[in-house]
Image (cartoon, rainbow, N blue to C red; front, side):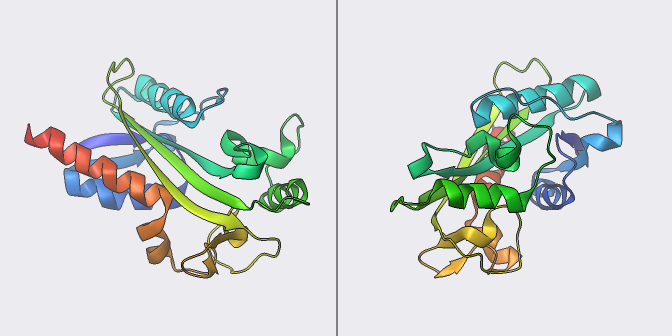
Length: 202
């Protein structure tokens, strides 16, 4: 089984990625296993930030590396919070990240706007080495709308405010398995596994 470093310390992501990538003969290890510090994410696009994180982890470990960058994009806000999703309420300040304040800012920014469409977006980047000229890049989207009153106790981030219209429930009201089958990250991860299988069969 080949080793692959995940450019994240998130235990939920590690578990999810490890399960899926074991099917294509990869053992996934978190970058913290190698004492790799988090990379800066200075860019305006998800794909550029994911590339930076993957190359950073690959350079410091000498292993293939996988990174994801994801967030929520709200139509009426021109795609914001976008790459700032995790720190939307604290951009330009030294305040710590806060899901609660991020959600409050989105709701406040949407006051008076009738268009509540939003989608979660995820891009995954896999590099074979730090200077890989042909990284494997996949993406996934999950469409819904923003509601004013939170519902549900599962999930994290913007999930309690993200209504999935065809279910009539928020992302925080569905099970982890159902979320994985529908979510932006789940879609991207399944596409990544399919592309890795195709690469192995060549």
